[in-house]
Length: 247
Image (cartoon, rainbow, N blue to C red; front, side):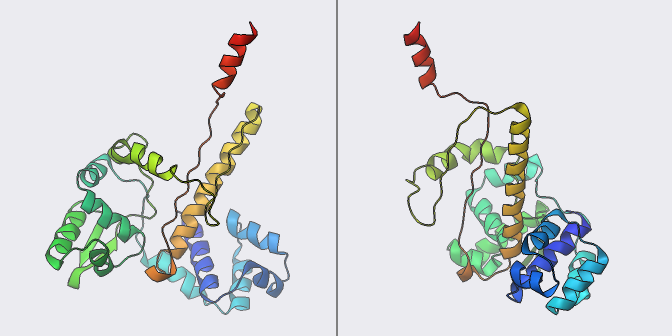
């Protein structure tokens, strides 16, 4: 993540903390709400406009710049194959790491996984040895990787859990108010397919951005949410049967 994106992310977090919506911000800086959304989503934010937004929102520029200058120079959402292998081989360690990447404190992780202090320390030492967290005093830990994690396409985590995750995720009827399932199939040109996949990539980026914005919220104010996106050339097998009967 570049420094500009980090500053914009810090700005969004500061706006949310102050309860300032895009509509409210738009009125304060004399722009339309779509314009504000476009500026913040595309990262096309000039310094004068950033200063104007900060002034209108009561946000100090230092508040946005400090996390960038004090944070690690390089972060990554993709782990090495060795790191993934270690996590895949130990479900408890993977559970601990997953909760940490979602903003839970080590003490909250221990409560969630019913672990005593000795077991928690063992997990944190192991994650520190894997260079995934920095172990600190009093069972504290700071992530050394950028969350949320993007598991390797051909990595051990997906090889171990993907089939189980897919089956469990699709076991719902998706009829509840907090569930969504949309399926569409149509004939598209190659150009349209490329545009669609770009939009899906943007939605994935938006999901990651929201996860980062909410990561430091108290556990009581959030819940685990899963998003599955898929797109590929595909023809329903029923049509093969229809072709056979028409000959």
